[in-house]
Length: 128
Image 1: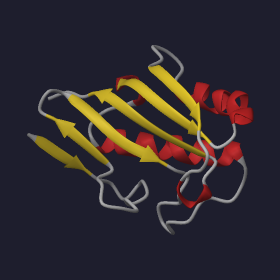
Image 2: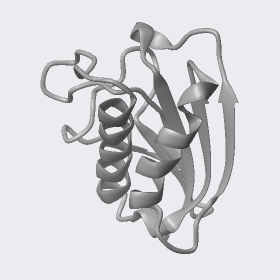
Image 3: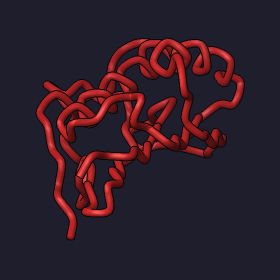
Image 4: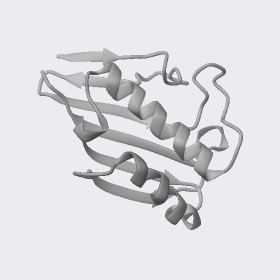
């Protein structure tokens, strides 16, 4: 079985997918988040710091809706439009994941939805 997780504190899905799925096996799979303003659905204005912060705030809101925290995250995947932004993204990321950091993959991609600079998805260990 699976439970759909949704919150208006993060952007609505822009396609046929859910913000997150919680399994009865205690895993939470959070879809990739791009830097959309939850109220307008538009990409937030600003560079990589602003966009990364928005993405992580959205992930945090979805985790909260699933009764999880950032400490529950066991793996992240970070997609960057420009690997030259890695150090800057890492600085923002480190403000959110401060201890017991999850496993992580970071890759550069040719393009992201809505021409975003960053997208992040997570897997978390959720309470049943």
